Every structure is written in structure tokens, then in C-alpha cells.
Image (cartoon, rainbow, N blue to C red; front, top):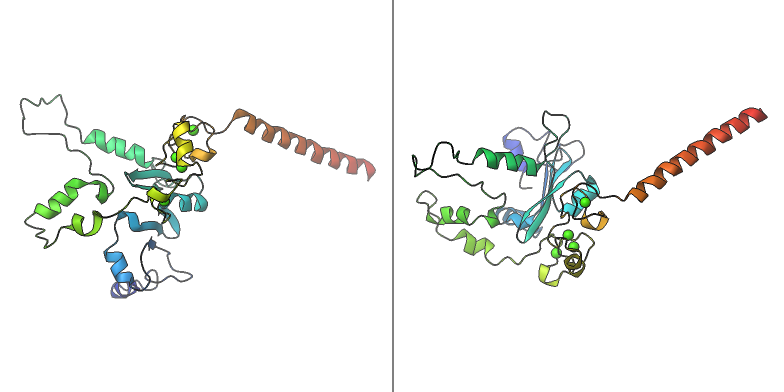
Length: 254
Ligand SMILES: [Ca+2]
Ligand SMILES: [Ca+2]
Ligand SMILES: [Ca+2]
Ligand SMILES: [Ca+2]
């Protein structure tokens, strides 16, 4: 509804603007009432965005939804009170295997002030920190909005929309205060405390295996046990032997 008219304006109605078979499926799923989708969209904060698909490909949203749509082909992003899944990898483009964490690391390196130039020579120059991905974890964003003469807003956006938000880290509708598994990874908060894993991240060691399925949740180099891999190979060998034996038996009888 919100996008139908803009699609008509741009003469893109044949591709986007409606949820219909044959369209590009560029979808945004946000929390809110269906009675007033315009208001829900305009007032949506980071916490309200539950899913983003581009041409039918789920690229961002609740991590448990991404895991169901594209197992292990996503990574954790978030900030205090918020965790989501993100997929920026795309095998068909150059450097398409770079993950979000690798991209951020490179940008941070590039934005560091080169100490070789010498800070004494340019005392007013400072490294520029990278702006957080989420506005709700970016105090400077709100500071700029509230103090900038150009913005000149008649109200305080932080106070109006963000200040009262209670954390629901995994976005499942159960506030952290009442949720026994804050990140929805199948390990309870108490259990995660005992294991040493992060109760606010479904993939503590960032190896793309969620904590409850990772036999080594604190070791990013592995997630499966050796003994779990071996039976699969043996079973395959046994199966191949049975198939080959059956084939030989039938050949002998015919
Ligand atoms: Ca929750
Ligand atoms: Ca958990
Ligand atoms: Ca966890
Ligand atoms: Ca691991």
C-alpha cells in the first residue's frame, strides 16, 4: 500500500509496489498495526524492522527467519538490545565472499589517522570513528539531529521514538525481561552463562553455526565434532558397497 503509488509514479508498477506473483519481491516487514501501515512505517525504529528481501532474497532481518530461509548464509549484526541477521555475501560478484565484519574492519582501518603524518603537525586532525550501523546505538546521530540548525526539528526524536523502547533483542515479541532465551538460539540465558557463550548473540564465535548447534561455540574454526563426520562417510561407504553388491548379484542372476 505504501509503495504502490510511488511505483506508479516511477512507472515501475510492473516490477515493484505490490505483493504479487511475478513481481520482484522487494519486501520490508516491520512490526506495527495493519490498521495504519503508513504510521507503522514512518514511526518504525531499528527494532521494528523484521525482514528485508531484495528480489526475493532475504538479506536482513530476524536471524531465526534468515536461518530458516538460508541456513548458515548470514551473519550476526547488532548493538545492545538488538540482534539481527545480515547477508552481504554474493558469490557471483568480485569480492562477493567478503563478510560484513571483514568489510567493516577494512573501512575502520582506512579511516584511521595515519600516525606517520604526525599528530603534532596537525593537532586538529583526528581519526574518524565509523558510525554505528543502527541509529538506536548512535548517540551522535540524535545529538546532531537535535542540535543542528539545518534539522531544526520541533521535537526530540530520541525522546519521542526511542527512549521508551524496552529491549527485545531477538525481535520475537517477548521482551528480554520476560524472555528466558534472549537471543532465541535454543540455549537458555542461564545455560549460556554457564557455557560462557553470549546470551545476546545467537552465534558467539561468528562461525555461522548458531550456539545451540555449535559443539565448539567459543571456537570459530570448527562447529562439528569429528565423530559426527566419520559415521556419515562410513555410512556412505556401506551404502555404496550395498548398492554395488546388489548390482553384482543381479548381474550374476541374469
Ligand atoms: Ca525476545
Ligand atoms: Ca540463548
Ligand atoms: Ca547465544
Ligand atoms: Ca564454533
